[in-house]
Image (cartoon, rainbow, N blue to C red; front, side, top):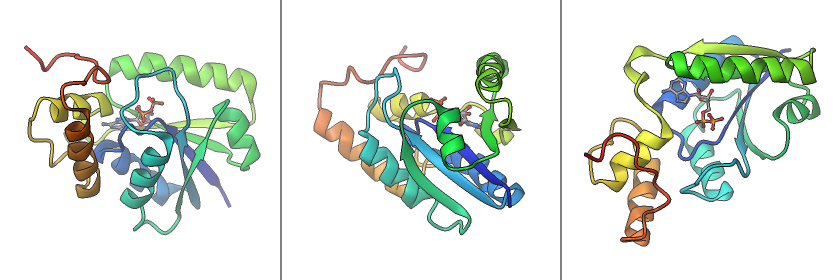
Length: 174
Ligand code: ADP
C-alpha cells in the first residue's frame, strides 16, 4: 500500500488544490492532505479553520484523510509512513520553488519521493492569494472555490471590515 502526503497551507483550499488531491487519490492507495500549522505567511484563516474547510471540501473522496501538522514536512511524512510527497505545479516560477524544496527534502530524507502533478490548465492562474485578493475586492470568485469556502471568505471579510492588511495586494488592485 502506498500512502502519499499532500502538504500545504490551504489559506483557503481552492479548486486547483482539489483537482490535484482528486487526481493524486486515484494514483495512490491513500492520500493524507496535511494542513500546515504556521507558515511564514500572512494568514487569513486560523489553522483550525483551514483544517475544517479542507476536510469539508474533500469529504467525498474515500481514500483522502485531512490532518493538521507542524514542523518539517519530511519528518511528518516519516511519522505517518508516507513514501511520497505530492505537490502541484502551475507555472515556471512554481517549478523553481518546488525544485529547490524537493532537493532540500531529498537531502533530509532520501527515502521519500516527490511527485509533482501539472495543474489542470483551467486552474493555471489560481492560487490562494488570488482568491483572497479577489474576495477582498468584491470580485466574483464563486467558480474558484467550493461553496463552503466562499461562505467562509465572505464572512471573514465582513468581520475584517476596513482592516484588510492580511491581504497582500499583488496584481488585481489597479
Ligand atoms: P504552499 O504554501 O506550501 O505553497 P499551498 O496551499 O499554496 O501551499 O499549495 C499547496 C500545493 O498546491 C503546492 O504544491 C502548490 O503548488 C499547489 N497548488 C496551488 N495552487 C494550485 C493550482 N492552481 N494548480 C495546481 N497546483 C496548485
